[in-house]
Image 1 (cartoon, rainbow, N blue to C red):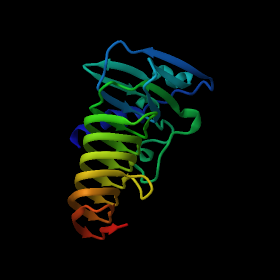
Image 2: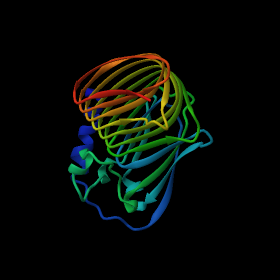
Image 3: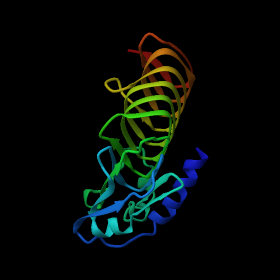
Image 4: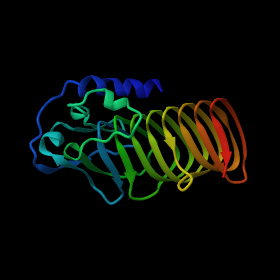
Length: 250
């Protein structure tokens, strides 16, 4: 969690100070990808879609916004930084509010990136929506989020580590052999109509988070505050609850 907080701090400082007016003109910018990447880091209220057919990174949005959005690949990490425009009119309170936060339509940027051959880590900060046109397959995948992000993915992974804080929403389906889930704030992990199937899971929730999954093995963990955990499947569940937290089977 310390890493994602350090990732978020520059976003907070810059987003409060940036105040350039929009042009009102929507344009497209193409950025060639010269080096491969296995990690994706995104700052700012942008919509990112992974496309296995893409050969370059494409940004579509107001000319001012795409002009100040930086796209770099260094040491195997693709970094997209749109933090200078994030909620420039409304300030930091919108970044951490409990309800879903999205940039107004006029301030949104849609970005398509090539799906990496190997994906190991995703870091999102500040109302980012990340999705993929095809299921993501990986050995070990770590996802760190802070703010009010939306992660919409179909997964086929051996090990999934999720570290979320704020009001993040995870809409996942598919399977993970092992899941390590750590959430704080008012985050949501899957639903009763869209969830992951796991063999082994460790869950640590705090605040008012909710998590739903299908267990075919053993789920262990702790839920403190007013969290809710819903589990289906024939697997065992050993969850310690504190406060008003609850565990249900469905």
